[in-house]
Image (cartoon, rainbow, N blue to C red):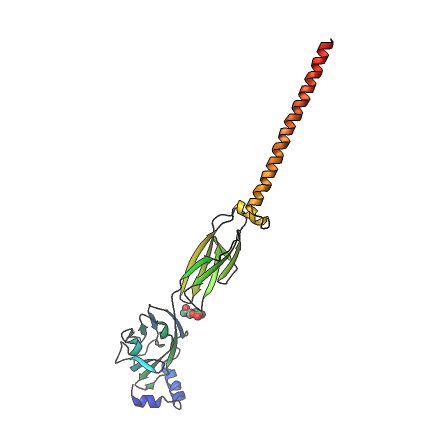
Length: 264
Ligand SMILES: *[C@@H]1O[C@H](CO)[C@@H](O)[C@H](O)[C@H]1NC(C)=O
């Protein structure tokens, strides 16, 4: 890009050129100037012009650094050999994205009649998300606190499912309560960031013995067993007494019958 066009494009001249070039490129600026990229993958930044035949120069810059132009399509500085400038539509492909590639990119064009307004594209590079669900250590049964953790520090949103049902919770933490008899209920966390989604699951159960022990207000299983044994013992003693009493009545009746037989 020549020094002359750069000078012409100084702020004082800009309104004139915007007005002029507006005639050339009416409605060709792309609508969405924010692009999301993933670490390690590629992204294409569009030049913002649909068709422009009389372009004589193009310059992509990142911050204050020119990173590619019509004479150097493979990039400089941190982008060396990671970018490719497409000579047909002047889009810029960035490969093997890094977190530090996040920022504003500017694309400036020069035509035979002057310089067109620069087109800005903001690139946000995110890491691909990974997630895991763990159970917070606890001695409670039939209740659990589930934690969904990811490799991200920010820009994470969460959804939860119980089986196939969506749950209303949207935090990285989920309190669950099961009813007795619910076995192997799957809880799934779906964590996402602007470029990816990851699911992770855990199974929870609530069996009867555990529930009874738990709901007897912290009474230990040992105490519960003693109570059951005592009840059993009482029932057994009652049975023995019952049988004995019946035998006694039986014997008495026999004696009476014997006496009656003797008297006749
Ligand atoms: C990029 O991510 C933002 C959230 O940070 C989102 O609002 C936007 O829709 C995403 N853009 C595209 C093109 O996916």
